[in-house]
Image (cartoon, rainbow, N blue to C red; front, side):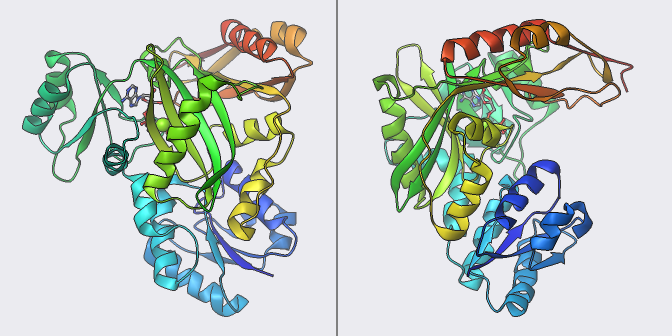
Length: 409
Ligand SMILES: Nc1ncnc2c1ncn2[C@@H]1O[C@H](COP(=O)(O)OP(=O)(O)OP(=O)(O)O)[C@@H](O)[C@H]1O
Ligand SMILES: [Mg+2]
């Protein structure tokens, strides 16, 4: 029976779902390392744990290593170290390397975490992606703009949630951006050629370097467009049938990219574009299960528990590729304005029209603070065997549902 340690700095609902899935697997002894107290876990999860160790900084490699050593003494050994947070992937790799625990090491984790390095690896291996420069000063930024040309996208090299990500169309926007948020030696910024096209994800499982399963979704529209236009509510569509030749390029280049980064076994979340000329460009990839309800979307589309499937893959190196049974989509309900939620409108219409295909709804509550992200204040998940039904449903939800914000704080 393997001894596994789950590093979960904060025991927030999404994290708890992954921890609970790991704890529910038969024949695992699971310890948890967190910053939050154990009582943030539901009673049945706590009852299933072999141990809990509290640290003051759950993303600090030294503290994780020390806590893992304590767990190893307590359990006899630690055979597997897991965690799903993006910021944890490099520290987890470092601790695996230091303690001789199998799994992704720091070198590979860093290829995924540092987007400039990731793109350099892609370019070296002929994986299509946007050209980029990592800039440490205004002068380097201006030189990169001349070399790459507009439009450009500026973003932090290890960002998440599209924070501090901006489109720059000309010299004057570049100068304003340099004034407001200049790059520096300690805060370099990644400048990329902006790819114009339709954005998608490619979520996949590799085992020993071979593709064993994948899922493709379409973003409606791109997260950057959502951020640039406060009235847009984001949606994601997972078509039921993804077997067509239009997706062959991402199957080939996606896997080539993952291998180039050094991944052997794991579930990853990749984002990519299809340009209007049909060519693809890989945008980025995370060596962890996807966020933004995507793990739930994958579960609904395949009628399986992808949280548990991920935990089994991590802990037992086992994965049974599930069959895609449905088209699924999520519409993210996003407040207009700023402040807190003062009203949610249109839900009666949606209940009437889509009540039977809604499989999950997390509705914004009055008084809830605006999230300030493109994922908004709540979401609705639709599922149906026919992709066209889900697509039309998503468009209708984002057209009809309106989250009103007010009392700017
Ligand atoms: N080179 C590019 N060309 C066009 N759009 C881009 C480019 N880079 C980023 N974007 C847009 O900005 C969004 C955020 O960028 P990216 O995915 O790299 O950052 P992130 O902070 O990891 O975001 P998230 O956590 O939301 O995935 C992308 O989803 C895409 O819409
Ligand atoms: Mg992204």
